[in-house]
Each structure stands twice: as C-alpha cells, then as structure tokens.
Length: 492
Image (cartoon, rainbow, N blue to C red; front, side):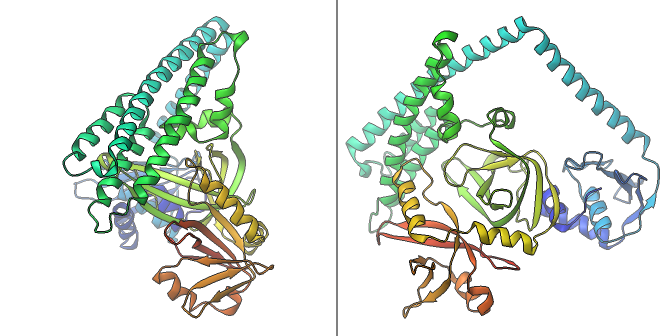
C-alpha cells in the first residue's frame, strides 16, 4: 500500500466537502470496524449512516497508482465521505485488523481483469488482420481530412468577422452591437475550432470592457486582435497542409503538418484535445519522472466559460518548469473535480508533455506521492536556476514577440542578492550585476520582510515574467523561493 498522506487524500478526493466530512468521521471514531488485507492491497470497514444498516466501504489499492473507492451508501460523490474517512483513519494511525478480502471485491477485481484481457485481445486481433487495420486507417484519414476542410471553413468565417471588426474599428463593439458579435462568435462552434471561437469572444469582451472605462484603454483588445489574426493565419496554413497530407497518396505523403503539430501548440490553440496515447506515440513523454509543485492558482476564463486550475511544477528529472491545467466548464462543475495545492514530491510512471513553448503543459495517467521535498531535491533546483539574467531577458523578449506564444513564461532564477530601492521597489541581481525588477503584491512584501538573511541570499526564485506595455518594463513576478532547505510559496 502507498503512504497515505494529507496531500494524497486531497488529490484523490478533489472535493473539499467530502474531505472535511470524511476527516470528521475518522476523528469522531464513527467507524464500527476497520480492516486491512494481509497483502495491504485494500482497507475496508463499516460506518453507521442515516440508514438502519451500516455502510460497507473500501479503498482498493490493487493498482497503487489507481486506487478504487467503493461504498454501499447512496451518495453519487466518488469517493464518498465514508471512503475518505477510511483513508483518514489509516493516516491518523487508527487500528486496522487483518482480514480476508471481501468476496464482492474479489468478484469485481476478476471482472475488471476480464475486461482488460478482452480489450487486449481485440487490439491484438486488429493487429493480426492487416486488411482490417488498413481499412480502419483509411476511414480515420478520410474523416480527419473532412474535419480539416470544415475547420478551414470556420477559419474563413473568423477572418471575415475580424476584417469587419477592424474595418469598423474597436469602438463599433458597443452595447448596441455586442450581442451581434457574440452571436457571430457562437457560430464558430460548428467548425471544430473552439480555440478560435474563444479568441474572438475574448476580443469582443475586451473591446466592450474598454469602452466602459473613462480612459478607454484598448490595449487588451488590440492584443486580442493580433492574437486572433496570427491564429487564423497560422491555423489556415497548418490545416491546409494537414488536409493535403491526409488526402495524399502514400507516395506523395510529406509529414509537414505532423511535424508542426508536435513541435508547436497550434493544434491545441485551434481547440484540439490531445490524447495521452497520441503523445506517447510521438515520444512526448518522460518515464519515471519526479516533480514537486511550486505554485497553484485558479483562473476564470470567461471567453471559454470555464475555470482553469493551474499548477506550476519543478521537474527533478530534467530541471524544467511545467504546467498542469485542469479545465472545469461552468456548466459541468458538479462532474469535474477541482484541483488543489500539492506539497509532496510525486512520482509518475509516464509524464506526458504537450507540444508548446517554454513551459509546456503536462499530464499523467497516475502518480504516487512518494515523499516530502528533501534537501537533495532543492540542490537540484539550485543547479537548474538560470544565472545569466541578460540571456533570460533576451529569451523572454523573443518569446513575447510571437503573438501566439505564452506571454508569461516562467523561469527558475538563481540570484546572488535581493535589493530594495528608495521607493520600496524590489530587485534581484545575478553575479554579473544584471538586475530584474520584481512585481510584488502585498502578501509577498509582507513575507519578504520576515525572511532571514540565509533565506534571502543566493536563492532560486521561481518567477513568471510579465511585460507592462504602458511602462515598457519587463517584470519578474515571484511564485516561489527555493532555499537550500525549504520551499517558500507565494502563490497557492
């Protein structure tokens, strides 16, 4: 059985209400019986609920990377509070008696094994029959080509709408025409280009919002125009190449579009959702990777009508900074678990990396929270810190010039000292004396005053860059400070 920690329960549950209720059950000793199998593969027990008979609950660790909660209670929440209570009981050191695995659990394990074997058998049959496999491939290619042509129709429509907006001017997106433009953006939902649709919605919203202010600052709207123009232009080129590749005969096939899709984020920007199997097929994964989180935030994306739970992770395997994103549509919040901050080092059997820029998005199918962040982990982070700020600034500027690139790249910065000017502004300096101004909020300013000299000197600052267009200043926004023995997070 894996080591059950508070971090593991938070990640496994994904629901604050179930966590609180489950912990309360454990603390109040609400479980009448607590058992564990002799091979430590399952914990189970009974808990008195509102019904006459106690609820029978269990958490099955036969596959440690994918624990399975089960309960006889009527709750639709998975895991329910009773299964969560079992985990907390184990974490809090409650006494679990050794017992045989329940028959119903053994039966369910057997059925799951049979399903997996049947699935493998079908896959093997498809591989054995080359004619069937070839027919399936051709059908998939034809369907993909048809989808590309439909997407190109959507690009045509988006470009037409954008030309109309630019011709009439951003001031045309006023209260009178707002509904018309939003309806036009809605039409793009029929063309499999959700990213383009969201970009147009964001443009309309930014222009409308700018007119509500006294200063009528259209900077965000202008950036949205540039982004949408670049996305439709590059999207058209990419989709035309992809359609030609799919429709070409084998002898004429040139994998130009495929190369573009795995070396840039264009597919995802257009609205495609990569499957983990596809990423693995393209070699976009790292086996047995170790990571720990250095920042977490929840972003509200009104254009896409969803919340985005964003985690910032330092990868111990290669020293890179990656992002995780959990998308929760407004109309499906009950069905998608909310992510939370995570404080342990996790080990993933396969870390899948999406095509992208400096800090690509990553995902994993399963993970094991192995241990707390140790001094050796922080030594690796110290070595990964960028020491040449001039080179970092150059790289950031080159990236933000690209209208489709992430405008807020994250770097680990190995600084020699941190300073404050007469006006209370904060700066970090590298060994050559090159300085970077920090954009800080009240919480960081408060924390930094209470840091010791050992914590402040010669640390690694995980910082997200931000370009202030009005002041024409490139700021580093602190996310976390990594010292030789601790992680001090400024973003949760």
